[in-house]
Length: 302
Length: 302
Image (cartoon, rainbow over all chains, first blue to last red; front, side, top):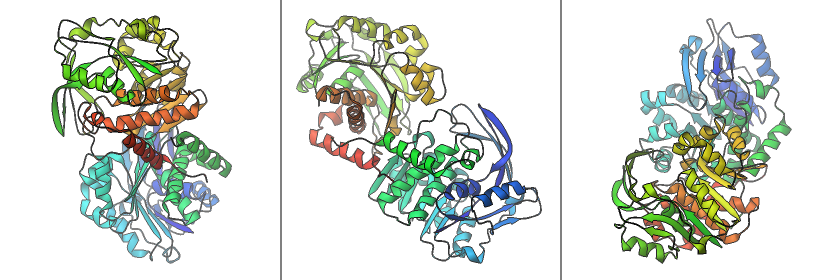
């Protein structure tokens, strides 16, 4: 089944205590699409500038990602520069150059309008709603957002949530969006606004899925070398939605497996800068790491 | 089998966003012993002042906790006052009155010297070592410590670790003790110093057990009402060591179950001030919550 993703394609400059990378391939749609491409067909709606290299396009095509919706317009590609300290949980943004992304108006190609699954990466909630108006009854809509939009566009965000099945945000954003310090109560409040599932990303602490009568806590794998956390959340979403697209089974037991698959993809991505780990990732490695998550989390009945 | 615990018995004054409690029963040995008493016989070595009430003694006795090693000396009982903000992860200490605890020198009664399991709660590592010199080849020794001792008595702490099977600390302390920002590497470094298991307490993110060839991540239950986190770490240790004493099985699969039992006891304790939730806790409730942890963490093979 096909997944439509709408988000950013960027050139990132990243500094971590372990090294740095300049103008490497990044962006939410890029990370999501690459991770999801291990499981399903992915279609990208995004924008790049004239300076976006053929090499990056060739890589995305090598992953069988459909780029009909990737528009190339006059100007420079979106750039983000950030750094991480030893704790690697919080990015400090050094510079954001929106460039061609500033005027991004997602146009969904005709061939994409019947995509079965839609992932709205972290963009203006008004644009996210605009995307949903252009697609024809998808089976599953998932969305990401961030504190910036929760602060600035709470009403548009709430409206967008009415059409969303799965919202993926982090724990601070969950509390902020619900205006409720208790995470369990905050999560339930958000479920009342539309989504049937809330997936709370907790970085090195894993992920928590909240549904009306079902909570699931997936751990994160303790890694020896976390090189660069950039894109981990979007790779998580890519593994999660990708696995759901691959299986087209939205029952709780399968959603749990999809959450773990998201964790698997995020755990690989942080092992190298940019998409470098995913470039050389194989499906047997994915299966082996899924098993490692099972070993990590499993315990017997009393 | 019998567990010996050496630690503090205190009167706590606690403020949280949800209420406050004045001079209520607290202390690491108290929390540990009460939690462990649901599973095994517990012997306490600690000190209180003349002001320690008969009511508190009667409660501990009602839990069948052996108090031969609880000395009552002239002076006032150890007092701690603290407060928590909405996030409830970090306590802010408002006041510490060591009182009779300042001169605490643990003396192990003859009847306690053959205890099969020993828990060294968070006290001066020199005192922890002194305890170990007075006990006769226990089957399992577990210890807690904190940043204060890591800063001030690193050498005594390292020496103490040589005789310890299980060290229970939080993630910041793990990094601090090992002087290594990566948690996985920090944990392995500490295992090289003596303990066969490191149990990293992560508060609302659960617990992580690290052994040479075995990692286990236990989630924390997302609770609607976290009232007061005081004593959660010691209740965790009490459930963990209590379950091991009850089963006397130190194999990995059983250690995992013990970790979850620790999480179960901690999850109850935070639901009320002081030991109030544990006072009315029943074993069927414990079993039901263990099952809830299984439901929370379980997922299928691919």
